[in-house]
Amino acid sequence: MADDLTTYEENTWCPGCGNFGIFNAFKNAVKRLEMEDGISRQNILITAGIGCHAKIFDYLDLSGFYSLHGREIATAQGMKLANPQATIVAFAGDGDAFGEGIEHLIFAAKRNADMTVIIHDNGVYGLTTGQFTPTSPEGFKGPSTPFGSPEEPINPLKLMLVTGATFVARGFSGRLKELTDVFVQAMKHKGFSFVDVLQPCVSFNDTYKLYNSKVELLSQPAANVDEAMRLTEQTEKLPIGVFYQAEAPVYHENLLGNWNPTVQRATRQQRLQSIKSLLEKA
Ligand SMILES: Cc1ncc(C[n+]2csc(CCOP(=O)(O)OP(=O)(O)O)c2C)c(N)n1
Ligand code: SF4
Ligand SMILES: [Mg+2]
Image (cartoon, rainbow, N blue to C red; front, side, top):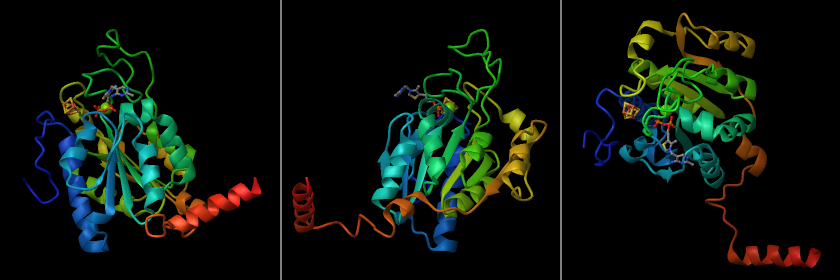
């Protein structure tokens, strides 16, 4: 065991995979949150979809709920409603969150669900060996697009800004310090925080050279959504860091007020009384 946040599970990521950078930056972020902000690891709950990215769930020694392909963001919302005091993190793949589960991503952002979504954006279905995803570049060749994808990729940051996400950021798995900083800020943000991590897949979409030459740290977040949208359109350079951050009411408080279902569960007697009064009204 390399450190006290790593489990004994055998690591099966390909050597050189960008997932290692995300894993290490996330562990650094958890340690910083513990030391600097008093957020204990027992209060950080994780979930993940299915894919290479999702193996992080097996490797991190944190509590949580292993979800399904494309369903980790729905699962994360349920976890937050059940335990509003917890800090919730959903690890997702690009195929996972922008393909199979895009509706959950959009609605969680729209509701300002208080959680952090970390996208391992490798532009490919890694675990199923190289099919194109919504963020694969035009011309991408793989088993499902042998002549090259004829589609333009989506712009995930722009999608999140339009949908109303209150924290929108990009990281690069090869820039550990900056990625750690972004994770810390995302997990401290009250509301929906979205971090799109540029993650090379050395086996099916090796983007190290591209990202190493283009990635550039933003000096500060944009002052408004319009400015942030323009930043997401840059292609000569790829900005990393926080693009946009805003305050807004969060979903679980709108829905539950101060009620915390984990510590304020109704007794059997109270539940029976509620059923009885419902039946009397019927
Ligand atoms: C509902 C469902 N559809 C499809 C699959 C098959 N499947 C498993 S992993 C995967 C691709 C994952 O790609 P991505 O989300 O980008 O993660 P990566 O492996 O690249 O980290 C697919 C299609 C599945 N497990 N469940
Ligand atoms: S297939 Fe790609 S994403 Fe999956 S472990 Fe290997 S390098 Fe990483
Ligand atoms: Mg992927």
